Length: 91
Image 1 (cartoon, one colour):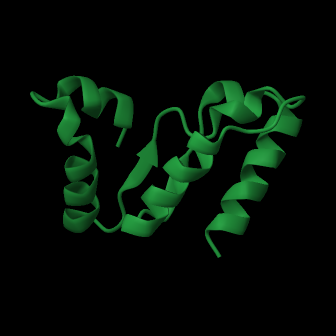
Image 2 (cartoon, rainbow, N blue to C red; image 1 turned 30 degrees about the vertical axis):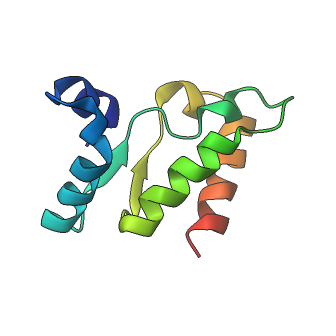
Image 3 (tube, rainbow, N blue to C red; image 1 turned 90 degrees about the horizontal axis):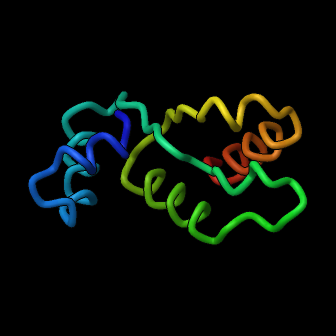
């Protein structure tokens, strides 16, 4: 599920959190995608708190599978850092 697309399509975008909960409740194998861990693109700066809390929320409500963006995957150092955080936070 591409969260950014879902957000745009909602009649009431402020209900995005409820929509994310409903999706994972209806499909426990749903994949969360769209702009995950993008602050890792800048390997010289500290990742944003928002990235950690975003991922933490998704994990807390039951998402287990994530799709990282193309930009993040094109830089090996950024990708490895993001995967390391995914690994730590999901255990």
